[in-house]
Length: 227
Image (cartoon, rainbow, N blue to C red; front, top):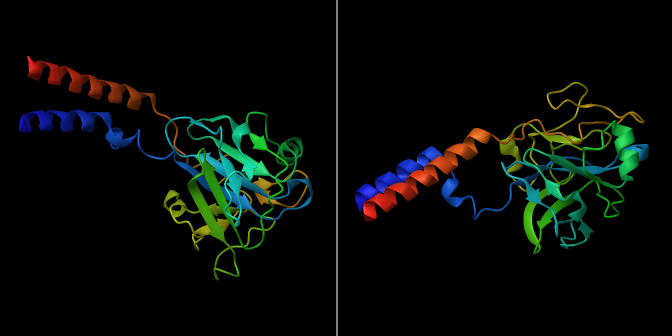
């Protein structure tokens, strides 16, 4: 019995960390950038990024602010969001936003958001079934020492800064040419980097092969053990 457990543990080690629990965890979608107030057609926007290694179907997903009401703003039109992909929700039209930030059609944008963000507010992301996936509560007056994302977007200094549901001093304002690739909007003085999150992981084909090899090893060894 102990030998079999050692074999299974070895196979899971080959497959990679978290392989045994991958099917029961929530999708790793994070709020990675936001601007609560912009100029002209840039408006306000929120960026969501798939930090996981597999694509996520946004059918039935939604957004709301501090009223915390799932289903308020549908995000279903994002469709399938790939690993490492960032998508945008904005109050501008999708066409206006792409033009303002010089974004290609490959960046998914949902425009016309009427649940406008305030200076102090919440960003709530819900999966299908009204399951809260991520929340960011912010406000420079409510949380002294934190940023005011007006005319410049807010960005986390590191991936670990995404784990807190409340903004911290480790969220900083975008500046031209910073580590996030921030730049000025074409149509205004606003600064941001919508549509790309540089800390997002990219899927590694080798990891899938290792996972399959590990599971195959488990099956083969267990079958041999039975014989």
